[in-house]
Image 1: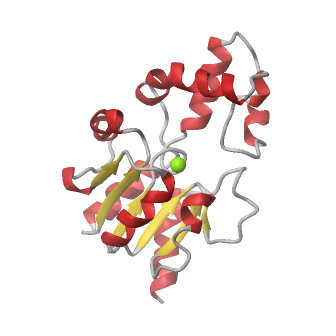
Image 2: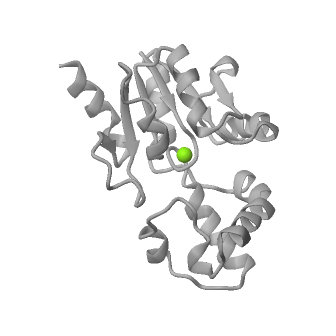
Length: 190
Ligand SMILES: [Mg+2]
């Protein structure tokens, strides 16, 4: 089967990593519980930044956010390796900007994710992901953002939200732990 994955906040814990970087760079100590209760994707508000300042903070921290030690979610690497071993095809579809595509691919490989050159797509807007996902004929697609999954509701693909504090209002199938993936697939096959 063909599995598609968003990367940031679906396979890796990017926003929390960025939250820690913000605390350090801004010399603040905003507790992680605040992070876990955020109702929007953007993380800057608890630091007292408005949207414009928040955008600037994200931009100026991006190099560090993307390419340092952002942890994959528990079992994400192992679960994808297992899929690959079983002969499934794994695709990555990330809206990270074009100039970060190749380095992101390299970062994923270095961190143990199974990556095939021709199964890695980047540089599109969130709402454009749907076109690529349709062309790839994926069986499954996983993403954290409601805006992305909402564009796929009418397709035959099985979509799943990666559970996050800002997507709990959506009534869609969701995955909380990557170690649950196999059970989810088996459930669907039955
Ligand atoms: Mg994402």
